[in-house]
Image (cartoon, rainbow, N blue to C red; front, side, top):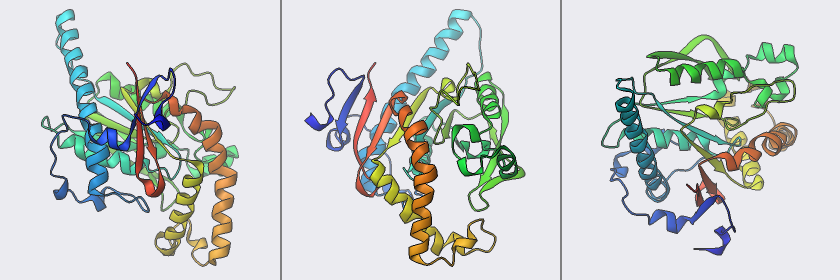
Length: 316
């Protein structure tokens, strides 16, 4: 094993990209038939090689966990002499702004739904559980959107509890990045998925400040968790490059919350994007997001251009 990935007495087993890609028993997927452009987010390149080398082995690993999860459910039913409803398997995906969580989430949703069992896989983001902008404004938190305290944690926990309670249908508030706000009176309906993927920057967080004494956390409802990791230098570059591309596209729409930045000169735009990173995204990363990295079951370690250079798996 490459010494760069060795950590003495680490609770994780580390793999280089090459080692990970050579793991046996990969499920067979017609990768060439998948439209990868529908899965990747802006400025997050996704290639057939990345899917085959990184995501296919992940799917095989998740299949192993899912198989044991179903087997445990059946054994418990036998033990209690009671036929119970199957409960959705929840996968949490965490990581910084611009790390590529949404691409990872969509790829896993697509590939998991293509496994032989053909499970129903739903995906939600925690953005919908942010407080609306007017509420954030009242609380003085508009400039701290994305920090733990900017989320309606009680509502998010209630949603996850309902998923794990065996309810048939539940709803999720919808967030618009175009409007930069939660869309009032609009919901995403989720109906009894076999697998639910929950993606958000702070989903592995276990503390939201001294004033809140919650005993239950979002991650308590996860059956498996993934952290998408990258160096702060790369994250900053990806965020700023994405901001530049958005100026040329989404910001041009007069209805966009960010339309005011469409006419900025490149120098002014870069100054603003760097300020947002330094004042908001970087502190959130360092104090809230990054400390949760080693709570994950699997860590995707990204290098340049969003391509994964290594994988860490929690030992059992």
